[in-house]
Image 1 (cartoon, rainbow, N blue to C red):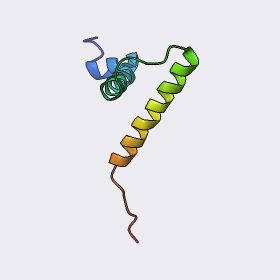
Image 2: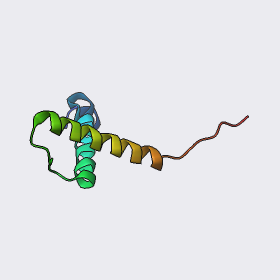
Image 3: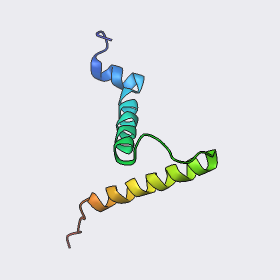
Image 4: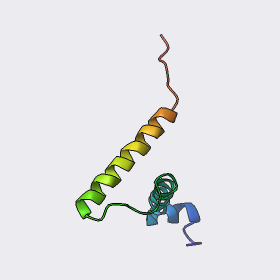
Length: 70
């Protein structure tokens, strides 16, 4: 790793993508809890998708709005 450099190692190993995925899961669990209430797989899938849509909506509401200049 020291021969190719830390930055290049992160690119080569895909570390950055893994870090982004771990951060996303951490945020999801902090906001929505770390357990599903549904017992059936299809219900768990639906529950998860509802939670994901809620997080996406909250993220969208928190984003700044840009206006195009004429």
